[in-house]
Figure 1 (cartoon, rainbow, N blue to C red):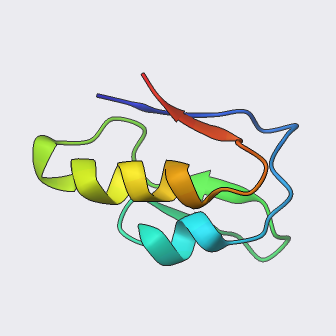
Figure 2 (figure 1 turned 180 degrees about the vertical axis):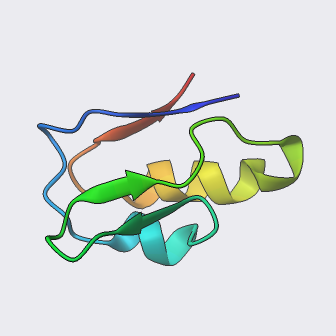
Length: 62
């Protein structure tokens, strides 16, 4: 499975980073950086939580 980021939509709120810090983080300029686009089944709960908390729907699972 894979996390897909719609970069123009992302506003850098950081809620996804709080939900899944192992998978993503905000850089010094507030831009979201995905640590890994693809993730294992063990990280699926975190990935889905990150997608769910994004207030601008900039993340999705593919």
